[in-house]
Length: 149
Image (cartoon, rainbow, N blue to C red; front, side, top):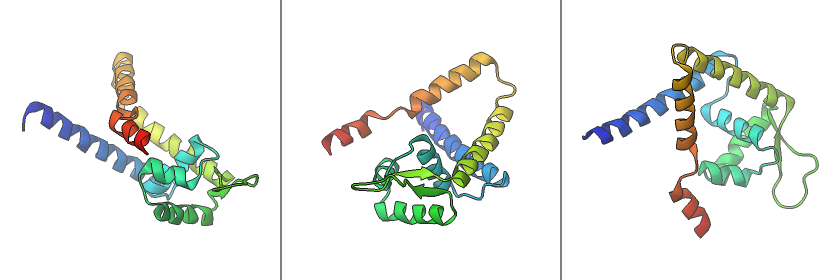
């Protein structure tokens, strides 16, 4: 492997580790949600009124998989369908318990991030934030696929 391949592999391992630790840390904070549950709850929190088909498309999951996950989150009282829904698809929102779980998860995860960044300079933190924002922007490949659909 050349240096670029090693760096790319290191990025993958680091992102997997961050995700795994985040789920474990959030669970230890009293939020017993799986990574998928946390992802869906967060997605709905950031996009109230989103529909299950939107989640399936953005997460690249089968709609039946998303429906099963949502059914579980609804049974737990974390997610509900909007009462003002009409037409095709049912807009989703977080129930009060879902909002609480989301806030608690964010609080736990933010404390973990803060601990990890404690020894970093303001400039290093700003650079890392910019790099992550850039990395998380929609990829040109995905945008092209959406345009073809």
